[in-house]
Length: 428
Image (tube, rainbow, N blue to C red):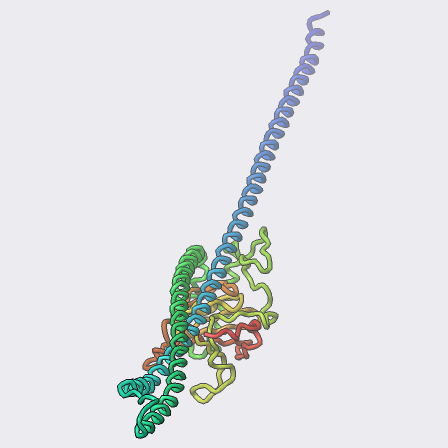
C-alpha cells in the first residue's frame, strides 16, 4: 500500500482514538465529580444529622432543666406555704394559751381577794375563841349566880362555832382552788414557753426559705426593674389609690409580655404544671370562683367590718384585723404583686392583682417580703406585722392591726363572702 494511502487511513483512526481517549477522560472526570458531589452531600447530610441530634439532645436537656426548675420551684413554694401555716398555727395556739393564762390569773386574783376579805372575819372569830378559852364557862354543878354565865357562854359558843366552821370550810375550799389554779398557771406558762420556742424556730425557717426564693428570683430582676422603677415614681407622683392601681397594672402587663419572651418559667411548654401544684405560675382558678375559700391573711380578731363608720365620719372600705405582735401575713389568694412599699397614709402597702379586675390591698405591716411583678400563691408568706400598733401614746401598747381591702374594677367590695367558712371566727 502506498505510503500516502496509509497516512490517509491512519489519520482518521488516530482522530477516532483521540476522541475515544478524550471521551473516556471526560467520563472519568464526570464520574469523579459525581463521586465528590455524593461525598460532599453525604458529609453535609451527616453534619445536618449531627446538628439535629445535638439540637434534640439540647432540647432534651432543656426539658429536663425546665422540669427541674418547676420541681424546685414547687418544692420551695410548698415548704414556704407549709412553714407559714405552721407559724400561724403556732400563733393561734399561743393566743389560746395566753387567753387561758389570763383567765387563770384573773381567777387567782379573785380567790386571793376572797381570802383576804375573810381574813378579818376569821381573825375576829379566833380572837373570840381565845377570849372564851381564857374564861371557860363554869361547871354544871355551880352556884345559882354562875348559871346565867354558863348559859350565856353556851349561847355564844353555839353562835360562833357554826360560823367558824363555815368560814373554815370555805377557806379550805378556796385554798384548794388556789392550788389548782397555780398548777394550771404553771402548766400554761410551760406550754407558752414551748410554743414560743417553736414559733421562733418556724420564723427562722421562714426567713431562710424567703432568702432562698429571693436568690432564685435574682435572675428575673432585670425584667422586673421597670416595674420597680415605676412603683417608685408613682409612689411620689400619684395621689389617688385608683390611679396607682391602674398605672401599676399597665406596667406589670408590659413587663409580663417581655417576660414571656425571656423567662422560660413563664411558659413551660415542655412541663405541664398541675392546676393546684405549688409550682404553678398563674392562678389556680379565676378569682371570681374563689368565694368562700380564701384564708384570712393573719390569725387575728376582726375589730372593724366592711361599710361601718370610720374615725373620719365616712364608711370603711375594708376590714381591720387585730393580730398578735410580729404576726405572719400570708397571701389570701394567688396573684401578681403590683405594688409593695410606702404609699401616703396607708404606710406599708401591698397590692396583689388576682386577675379578672380583682385586687387585694393589705396595709399596716412592718415588713414586706415580696416585690412588684412577683407571683405569689395563696398561703405564701408575704409580710410580717410589727410589735405594736404604729400610733403614739397609749396606742403603742395596743396590738398591731392589719387592714384588708378587696376591689373589683377599682371599686371596694365586701371581702366577707370570700373568706373560708370558719376562718373569720379565729380569735386573737
